[in-house]
Amino acid sequence: MGDVVRRALGKFTLYALDAGMQRLDGGAMFGVVPKPLWEKKIPADERNRIPLAMRTLLVETDGELILIDTGAGNKEDEKFRDIYGVENEGDPTALEDSIRAAGFAPDDVTLVVNTHLHFDHAGGDTVRRPDGEIVPAFPGVRHLVQKREWDFAHLRNERVKASYLPHNFDPVGEAGLFEFVAGEAEIVPGITLLPAPGHTPGHQSVRIESEGETALYVADLIPTVAHLPLPWIMGYDVEPLTTLETKRAVLGRVLEERTLLIFEHDPNTAWGYLSPQEKRPTLVAERPD
Image (cartoon, rainbow, N blue to C red; front, side, top):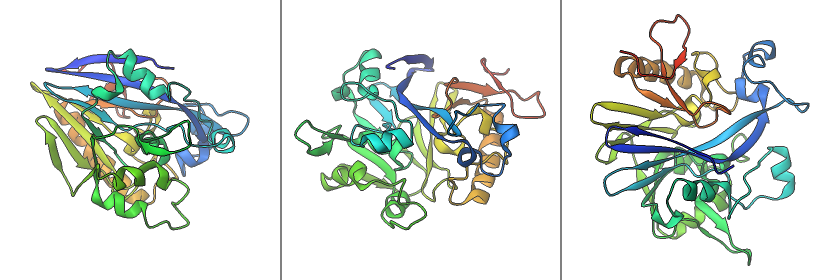
């Protein structure tokens, strides 16, 4: 852990950070797709769990260092870590180790973006100190999330409450560090938050553009390369038909703009481009002409 993959995007530099691994139920990750199909893509372990990266993104612009998602954090007990197969040990987690491996200190981060507030995406917003106190992991730094996501995370209904752990985000809100957005918003020149509902009502992706090149951190809209086909949708999604239409629109734009797709959970692939020549969605390493 602590590995970093980097590349230039125009004048920006992208750092795909290894914030650890987790293992989630393969059936839940692929919804209505039969196991004989999905396990050809990502084989399951003896507990029917598949390995998933927690790949956060650091974007270095002229004057900003933006962290997109924060992994699972360090607050959960051994039972939780066993159920979800969380492996993110570090100082205090693999996320911070990866930030250092990229050549920065965690204190260098100037802005945090949460695509949504599930435990594997916002768990690192806060940190448990040795004395047990839970505090913001990036003190004094603005955290951006859709207002609709914040409200949904606090409904605490039985369907979703296991994914939303208040100690991951409430201390950040209590410190006045959350800035809520409503809909599409350019947060700094070239970086835009794009609503991408379906997984949750307030889920968002992040579009990055510099000098005619574009990238899209898709987060849980398309968590792995195996989820590129339109009907391959997670059982975790609260509005799967909305996910379907969001994917249809996003993938159409991605092909048109020759956008680099960045995958948060794929265990092997950080990013790639869609090939326009294939009948089924296929990823290639180089930007299509």
